[in-house]
Image 1 (spheres, helix red, strand yellow):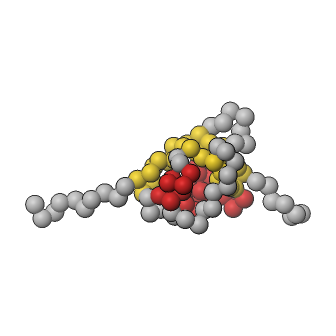
Image 2: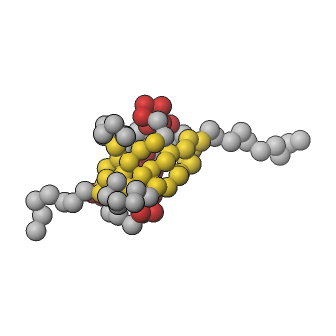
Length: 93
């Protein structure tokens, strides 16, 4: 069969919890390993209705996740259970 589908890229799953809400809502995102983690951060922030520009992702242990890497790298280093922290801009009027 000449039109066989290409092998699907492996995906990783993240459970991202919004820490600023006392109810601790969460979203489950499944993305390809090669996805830039900045895109995951931006999409998660949009889903929760918080500004992505002033948000950060941390682990449950409080370790900050550097977004300039792939989703697969973040998953291998930190696992799939992460927290989104919307931050206020400091020093602006």
